Length: 490
Image 1 (cartoon, rainbow, N blue to C red):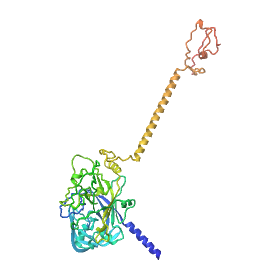
Image 2: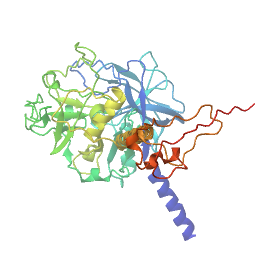
Image 3: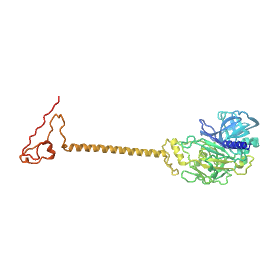
Image 4: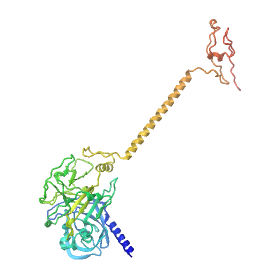
């Protein structure tokens, strides 16, 4: 029986280990969806989000499977449409976002996420509309202090989903990791991954990176996010020089350090307008991360995708969303932000760089510019080495060129040899033993002879001997030469 118990325990642990990782689905939307869910209550912030990429995860609520947006910038779970096997709490609530809001009855139902099951998780059930279709919704993974549902319920039963998971599994680390992919990356394609309490294989080095403390927001504001401080002089321009910045967060300990929110629901980085044209590299705790945002140059018109107002007394200076987070593997530790915290460690963030700059530039040229690099020279960007396939093409081209040259050279030499042989044959004397061809129609033309008395008695030259086959070497009188008659066969 001991072996059976051991086998069951091993099977359970294996199932648990395999259940705490979830693949994310990167989806391109054909319509504008206000998927940025960074909360700002009462400060009149506006955000016109026209981005077309979001990251979704599978979740089961009340026995029905949904695919909802993963958002570290908000803390509540909600879904549009009727959820089966759910119960009313008698309390209603709403969530205000930077753009728009949702509201409805707060209900409870069994929720399953990455193998974890919460039997009575609180969530918002909202009416579907043109903006939020039935079956759509958000999985808020931000700190519980930002949860509206928790504030309405008033106890741990209304805590955020991630807090309920941590409270139910207190031996597990209180962090999640997020890896966002690029759907059109020609060399490193993946959609993305979400883990709870564990780190992805081959990314364990994230645990060795600097721990960046999460900046606390006054509790009365109920606007806590995963926000960290940028290093002083940590905003680097394309010329490699730091861009001076003065934080607008009044409670900041050092106004030369910008407060930065990390949000998987944002697309492009949201930085102060006066810094947007200079921004290239961000630095956290000595960790540098170059954020190269490439675009095709169409014309000289300016394009402003967002109109952004953080109010007169903001809690942060900028938001680094998907465009930044796609360049790093991110670990978010909740620490004592977990409701009714059983841990006393302060929350923190760790980054592990995942983008090789030269490769990213090469991929951009391949995907966006059809392999023709028309980007302007940049001293801060080292060109990527030529890929092996290019070397093969160059080598093959050289070999073909050499072979073609050798072929032409040999052909030239052969033709020249033939020409010289023909010229030599036309100027050389007739061989001694050559006789006229049979059935010749005309006698050969012997060399002209002169028979002068003074030549008699001279020796016959060897090359003339064929014409005097029966004469002695010396003659005393001119030979009598007879030519054969023409022969005709009938």
